Length: 269
Image 1 (cartoon, helix red, strand yellow):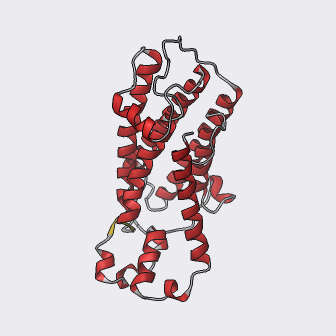
Image 2: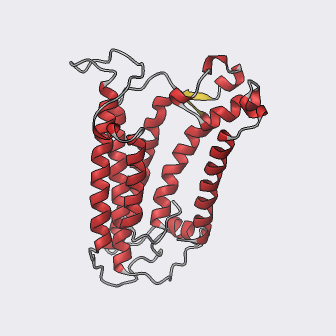
Image 3: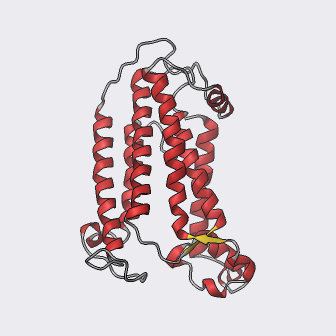
């Protein structure tokens, strides 16, 4: 992975870790009822964990958007990563080349167009980008037709970060290959052991995540499928019997499976 990207993802991970530590050991000025405290809590919490929303100052409430806008994340991801997937497919299989603006982006991020790379690594990147796009398609479908969103809110900063995140992830994956891609060589897809393990793990985690999301949605629906409540209830079944937040745990496993599919060449994202 280019040094710039690796540093950016590492810095982002460190920032989240620092926020978690600060939340656990927060000083009084972050746990009180002041405006600074409310802003900090809004930036790290969302949905049901964001208590006292109505007691927030008016200017803080103006910075909130509906949690159901999560759907926009996956709309952006399907469009953007689908666009990148098409360009990579053209370059890999149809003898085309990546557009100049993608090449400029790679150069800006420190990716050398002449870096040595193998067709096997190209295939790994193509597989991961495909898995990311399929994941986004499934999550978009679940947001539209399965999940039942409450009246919870998220901060506008969290919303903008989510939009930028799915653009950045796809771009990061594409940066694993040089901009010249094939360089006139015949493309050969060689399936390796880590492709099999990664895809198997991806399918396994995706199935369980979908089941858990269906269980959560059914807590707010009648047997006929009509939404009857927006309250939170205790879920049972599938991974809920073993993990407190199995849908988030499955999300972690999905990204681990993508890292495995890439051959564990990078672990920062």
